[in-house]
Length: 341
Image (cartoon, rainbow, N blue to C red; front, side, top):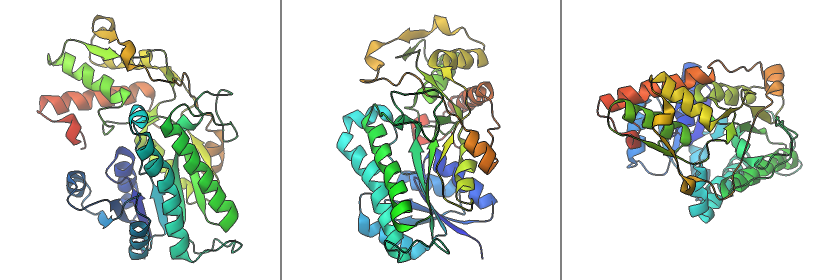
């Protein structure tokens, strides 16, 4: 029988790439959605016709238990979160409930449905759980590059909530013997990235300027440095983590840092434009507490999982610019996810 996977956050960037990857591996894929009338679910159904949908809400423990009981998954990928960092200051309580407490509710749903109790300490035949942890947990970093042993100092409600979920996943693994792992993923982007994220804001801005739809691009801190990779590469790492003999946490990234300024330069260059003629620095767009630099050391994933990124930074940025040029040229709406292929 085909292995069965349940994905929360199925309508997001990572959920869509992961669903495609698992379907290609022969999985039966289920996506958790808050309601069947959700327009994003309708779009997802058109793009990923083989994905089945089950109702559930990370805010509602009972609905998660019902979903897990119905699907009986071999693997659960918890990608659902309020993931836009600036919004986490505006909706800090909701971020804590969804991004943090949602992890607890899903772990409990798996534990209850699996009949796991403390001291059982057997993983044979258990549902395997993947938690989407984040490099934002490192925040004000204590060392560079960051490894699985680097301490956390999150600088946003989002980062704090992710740290809570990360430690819960470790706790359930150690206390209940559950096969539960966290992937500490660094920034990963694609043409499917939401329009509010800085990478997509830049590539959409470049496309609008190139097509004569805008004359400027307003950005905040150009000196922040990140480790950016391609989302399609990173979902492969998620899957590999749940195939390992023993559950362990992994840092996933390219090991190379680029500044927002370099991102801007690459995007404008891909469109044949000079960025300095169009970019305006706007202090109001700075974060309340900035994370200055994040850079992964993915050695453990490379050695133990055999994972390597395949798309370079420049190729990723060019891919996103080209996609947004096509999208806008065809009258597409970036806020409606019409950049999905």
